[in-house]
Length: 289
Ligand code: KMH
Ligand code: ZN
Image (cartoon, rainbow, N blue to C red; front, side, top):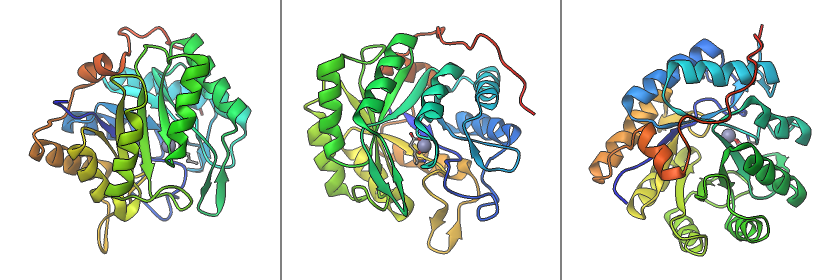
């Protein structure tokens, strides 16, 4: 493994604009963030969107407009979240795929999520996985706990490889209710990933104060990095994150120190089996208000 795929997850569904004013919530803010993060070394953007009141939404018109604007303004791999917020119904989460992203997230099981429950029933996981296969969307399998890697093995065994043939997982570590954001937990996952198809890759992100330990552990075990204000709103003790760019710049610095410099979006597509040009361009791009 030579380079590092850096994913930026700039917004998420959990922080409010009132609490975190630097959070990008409008399309203009998201596109400006995406461009700057790409210039710094990010290759993938993991996208959650907000409505006119800065609340999380899975509105189809806004999703399509977002995919289209990010494609026009950046070369980033656009990965839509199919996880949404813990309150989003399954139908709306499946409909995210209609917006035609190159990639979408696909979570491998139910997990307590702070005070909420992030529900991912087996039948729902199968639906997401098989619809992505049919539509030419490359999944990023989100893993919140070790056993979810076994669920992924079962999924691939029963329903086959994802579109593109490459398996890529993202370890989301330190959610209250999931696995801890520790090097030991990451190593346990890395061992389990060896049981997935040969060549499978992983990225990792540590929530909150787990950010740095997870980043270091991932780089030292051949993993890639996800950073951003979806996961981290405190840069250091008593210092709020100023922008997503600050987090991407730190990740780029760590990757360079590890002698695993950032991969471009083009190199990332080649690694993850994402074809270019991509076949999932949406048929229409309705204007959002
Ligand atoms: N917001 C979380 C409930 C994903 O994007 O796929 C789910 C999440 C995972 O962020
Ligand atoms: Zn997410």
